[in-house]
Length: 249
Length: 327
Ligand SMILES: Nc1ncnc2c1ncn2[C@@H]1O[C@H](COP(=O)(O)OP(=O)(O)OP(=O)(O)O)[C@@H](O)[C@H]1O
Ligand SMILES: [Mg+2]
Image (cartoon, rainbow over all chains, first blue to last red; front, top):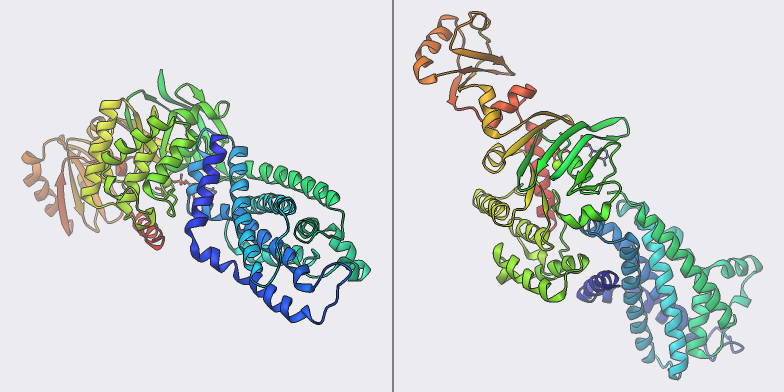
């Protein structure tokens, strides 16, 4: 526990210190929120799901922010490899699983903070906040997304040695995962093929879970969301830990 | 009990043999040097001893723990200062120390006491709360050494601890390493390609070349093997006739690229005679250097090459550039 806490602490400290990273990674979610939200609000009518499009979009953008921050936090391992700090942790008398878990929880924490900032900012564009019970549900799903995708990032970082692979990951994993997640449009409105892809995408269940928490309605039963996303998180932790254990430096 | 026992240790990267079947023992409380040119296999050897790399063949024990079978035992007993930087630059010196202390599960009170004590020892108390990215190379190195000592290891590995440091800082570090060894009885294993460093610090030195140990002894013994005095003559010629003369006071003549060296028993007495002979054989002399044997001569003797070759220079340079870039 001590060790996991230590590594968690380092990650959170580094995150809180990098003000430019915090502000920088707000850029894209806010851009989506404002451009899409206000651009489409009057055009799109989804009265069967949500009051208006902006309200529908906010949970998706919160999920986006959590997704990006957590994958980025997992990828952090590549820097630790390059700057040599990883050696310091790997030579200590602690298990690699502990290191990996510390990194995962650290990444998830920063991702939740980042998602919370988006949530707070969206209050300014007139989104109402639900009761504490519902809010808790939303945070529960943010946590699961954070854990699953930090592990995912760690798994990838364990296999690549430099940042050249980073763009590849962004284009072939991160953007598709986000784009197909139902963060931006209702699942029913999609053509059949895309609807299936959306249902395969684990982030969909996170988005829907957060949406249920924040707006009280969702297209997928929140219990199912919880089960699917939890299972996905467990699998990702497993894969991340096993790949991390094999790191050679 | 030995601090380190290595038997037939081998490491291959693909077909390339980086460490070739080496064996040696290091006694407790010894300062032991691994001396060799770039690529000799020093870091690879240390990495295997520190459980960072799996040996291809052979075995090694550190403090009685097998490096393969009891990784945790080994890890608890060793401290290591890596050749390349390994600090978190976004943390302060104090935080880097604290992180280390927590990883090694040192209780809070002891941890805080030792951090104060060690930072003081390496002269970084005043900079304790500054981010490491604002540190100079020498300060980082000192911090890494302090960190390596925080959990009171029985065996300390120092992989080129003074690379790129100014002479004053190097001197200071040497004194410090000696004191640690003397006062705390820590066994120190140090790799270097600085001859003077190995000579001054180490009780015994293993000269490593191309993955093999070519000589292992105390610095004094190693130098004695070369001869009483050494005259190095820089010249395009080689006095073959002189070598075949069998002069009693000439112990050995060895030819290298662009120079040759003559080991002889008493240079004060024989120098003028030697010069006369060289002139007599019409050897073009560009310059001459006369000195007591150094580890450089020992290395030349065993490998036929100079340790401070071009490559070493550029690699040092690259490492320094790497360090500098990271500010
Ligand atoms: N991971 C690796 N994969 C392939 N070859 C490697 C690897 N690590 C080291 N080597 C090779 O093994 C040889 C020994 O390297 P090592 O780092 O042990 O040398 P060294 O004696 O520490 O040299 P230096 O003085 O430059 O630090 C070198 O030729 C190096 O290229
Ligand atoms: Mg080395």
